[in-house]
Length: 142
Image (cartoon, rainbow, N blue to C red):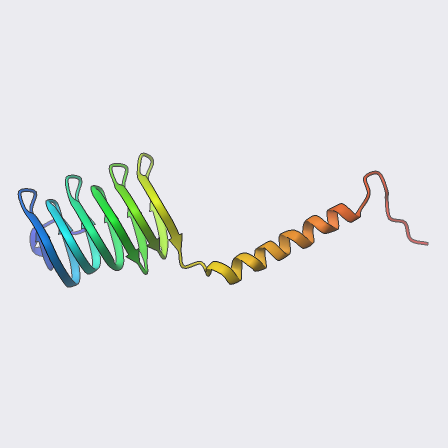
């Protein structure tokens, strides 16, 4: 994690409030204040007092503050213990610390319908094989 303000391509300080913003950032953005709008960023850091409301998209994010509306990431989402996310959340991988809060529609790029039906088919086949073997019967071969 970057330690200085100069390590970010975009920085919103704690005393800053941006509304109606539409941002495209080719790097890291740290938000310690508040942004309301649309944000596209490679890596997003929302500090403990930071708030981001709107449509957020990017590669990775580290959340210690609050994110609301939609968050769509292709890579890793890290939610620290003070992090709060409410809305539609989509991610590639996720790491949450004890105390983190996620509320809403949460999904990953696991492969929604095709993998689920395949898993359901395997589960169905497995339970069918259990049902076909009567309790107390043993198979014998002569």
